[in-house]
Image (cartoon, rainbow over all chains, first blue to last red; front, top):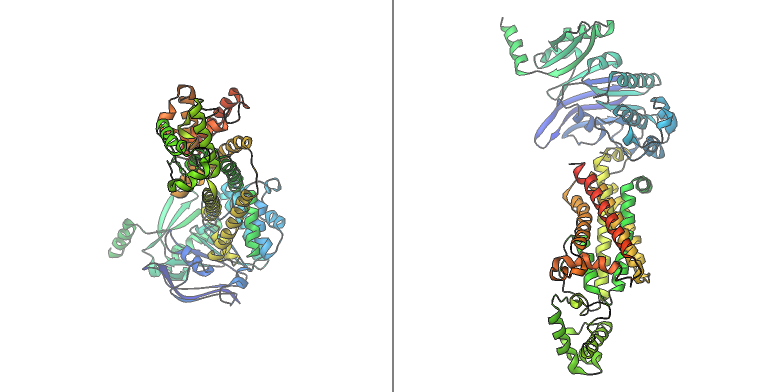
Length: 271
Length: 325
């Protein structure tokens, strides 16, 4: 079964078309990571998936049903921008969902590793990483079948990111499907069953990267401290994934090409 | 809808902004109620003070039968011309013979008659105050003014409550969460409207039942001031539009202005009666102070209140404007 089915989605803002025929499927129990540079349309795709933005055309189904309250109660979402009541305590923020969709807030806060002594403190006193944990607890309190995380680890320190990764992997083991957007390749390497790249409004897989290699770039940090920018080809993608696994590469992110990058690639082709 | 309402009520409980708004609104209603009730003898200053407090402008109003004199001579002349020729049965004759003053209440007429008698006897116009320019020709505030104030208070409370809820949701981007809970934006805002309406209704309702006395005016005004300065500071921290900023700024500005003017232009010098735009708050302070309490409040206490008043207003400005600039 597919928990997410998006087919030939065209969507945008005003006259600007951001998604130009995006097609995506998330199989049950898998982690799908969507990568793309800033401004590629990852958030737009997430908005369409969750019903915040109506697509111009195309179909969206979650759990093989059209969007609606029956579907929403099986979803947990962590947004890129924090959506949280800062005056409320951590536990009250989580209860907002558990009151409606069920679940135990204390269990959820334990799962995400938020120390018990801060549960009743106002969220406004929390660090960014702690706030993220509260949002994660709220997203998983009702044990959803699908978790959607839109750049949820952006701006977090590596330790906080690792903790969130652990939670996601343990949820996957319990059968939760996860859709995760990011521009960190190491997250894809660590979490993903399948990686999609968003390019020019369409979704492509790692195997299809060569189609547009001169428009996307990987920024790679080697163990030696060297930073390298590589065209986003299938070969480079696989090399980076393998480097991340054996520890030769510490981190890698996806970026859009600058004019200089395009020039370098074209010059290389001409030679 | 029920869940939305319950959660929002809970949110209000945790939201000190809303609590403060509720408290200040309630205090304002009480204050205004006392003010209105006690304006049978001194309406213009209190009413104008009230309007000034809310709008930031001490408006020289002339509605609902209220007439304000800024010249003692002119007022004395009017009293003589209007009342003295009419003899003993002054109230009714004035009422029937002078269409201009048809809306004058019997209390006001009675007061005018007694003032005229005092004038004839050479006793001065007003028993405890010589500065008659602001008080004797006052006409009953009556139903119009009370209804106006009630409506104004209701509207203010409604708007503040609604905006504070709506702004919070927007500020924390929580529309998205409500969407995931299957609550549309329309439903969400309808719940805010309902809460704001009920809050305004409950707060405004007691006005109909209270029987205030003059001493409470003092407490009410102090209460209003203290709380409104605090709330202003809080408002400004989250002011996301001009309306909120406007609502937030008014009370401390008005109160600082009033308190400052009172300190700078003491009654003894008799200066402020020549500066029409100062009398709004001065008269509130005066009325709330020792004179209004017929000597019941010591000057030290009066000054103490003024100092606290100013400190809180300055604190509000510091927290709201300077710290968040």
